[in-house]
Length: 80
Length: 187
Image (cartoon, rainbow over all chains, first blue to last red):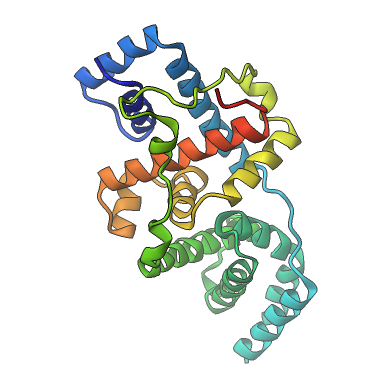
């Protein structure tokens, strides 16, 4: 029987590669019986979805005026 | 022709900077990669065919610059950064592998919560608190959507190592979200 700690690792790993059959079954069995690990799994999946959402909607941070000017100057120097 | 690139700085500078900042966290580094991106664009503008929008083209260049920098930083990272850090698995589990800090049911509807600006702001804060090394890997994997294999090859780490690091990043982030958004009491 897998421990919660092992299951938590495997749930995260399953986002990276398909788990081997035995591990997959072990995780599934554990999750059926353990509500804490189920809550953890939900959180982990939500986190991934949140990161995907975040990647699509960039918060807008303006480039500072100094940086903008510096970049323009660099372009002028380089463009010559 | 450099005049056109200069107007691009006004038109796309903010977007590129936001993109870079969310991945690098450090404003100075973000400004640097944005500058490098515009310089690279200037040098290779004859390769810009106009098939994609200028912004898409620039973001493409920027992505490469960001990954290059992350690769460089990850080689240079100091050892001291790794030590004196309690690993989340030690924090969240007891010796027998049982939960010590139990995950609470967030009781949220995934579709709804992701639309909430406040939730995203807390997520951002939590990302801010990730240790550098974890943050770099997590960004490549989850924001840049690079595959595990590609990251391992790029950063010269084993997949086992990557999986452990991603696990730790996820553990920390969900812990941080529980504390700061869901107001969960550790029990």
